[in-house]
Length: 330
Image (cartoon, rainbow, N blue to C red; front, side, top):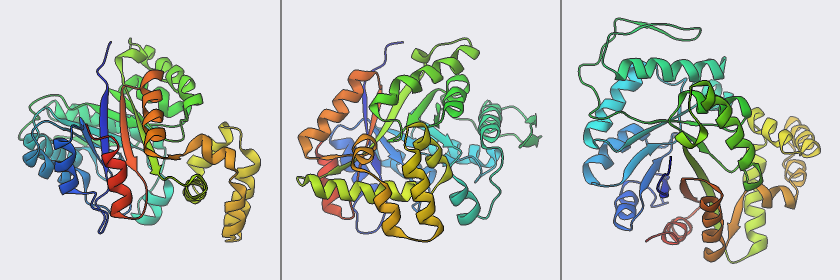
């Protein structure tokens, strides 16, 4: 299936960043195709924000990236989907994912158990609910009987899964309408991701070409190469604390770095953690540079077979976010 190329902007509604609702209005006026709404770090609820933007915006597609499957039971999540889609008919995309134990257990006080099964069952039950009938579902991690929506979405709501590892990529290929990749699928690993997606897609009688391949590109815009390297090193050191990301770094060939980072986290030695993250590792996984370089990275993603790019400007100031957003304004 031939797909149009889409360019999205990841909003980050945090005080002082100018990257929330008003930036979304600006992005539509500047020609962005999609707005991606994060569900992380105490930010505004993405489906609530999608409903508000749906009223104010008329063309842009509104996408959640990524709603954890453990936070809300599917019938409750479906009611939020209906409310948001009603304000943006045919323009809502539901991004789902397993998240991490740190978020689910430490932040939210919930159990993080059997994530692959939970993602699969959430998609299955959600589709049953959104179809409008009464639920009759008994899974290994979810069950629901007798729930029925009072109203349904005006159009099918595409479901995309956030995926990094092979098993989740295969699941996305099997049950979802698309996949959201991130920086831990560097360009040299895209082929592997597409292969795993195709394996899953074939289980459902289709091919990887039937899926929307989406990639979130975290981009740090800077004219100082060393400053960009150090900023992204700290960013990568943060991710190295999570088991899921450690597993991917192991697959990418960074066993010594992971073991050293683990030792640093065990002793709360931040300098040791940072030193474990080598320059080559940073440059392979995270992206930084001037405007022309960052645009070239996105162009290369499109050329490699990615259908939709989500630009996620990095930095701790409104000026940094604005520079990244303006670099791709049409």
